[in-house]
Image (cartoon, rainbow, N blue to C red; front, side):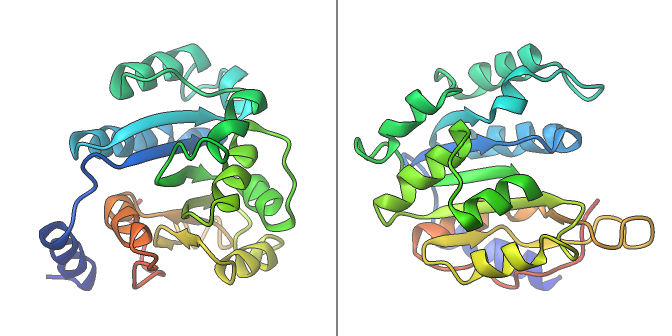
Length: 210
């Protein structure tokens, strides 16, 4: 049994996320939307109360992977909650203390960079800002082609930022995309459980399952 499997079994036996209020903030790594929907469904199955928060790109962009309306319908069917897709709707997250944790899934390099330098210009970055003002956890599920390139400095800053945690990640295609890093889907729920306890799930760096 691998180290990851041991860790996951340990996490599953020790804690759960039932009744936790989780905001799942989705940004435009469109090729990972199948994994995103799978993870959201698994979180809901654990008994969590989930609300989807969409970046403007996700809210309006049709791609070969999925149409925007199809994604939104799937999310509403899974979560049974209305979608947050404007800055105005995301702003009350902090003042009204709406979530126990926010999971950015997937978190693009563009969004990681904005969070690192404090840019708030989408519903997702507003949600993160509102969550952090309450000193509550934000969990990032990275998906970016330049994690080991121009975005490395932003990721390094976020790794050293209070209340920000990462879903373990690995290289998805080291030969064709040597700077690309992607979250490990099977580590999302264990990472949520740890972040709720103010801990980073370890090991953080692994071999991608893609």
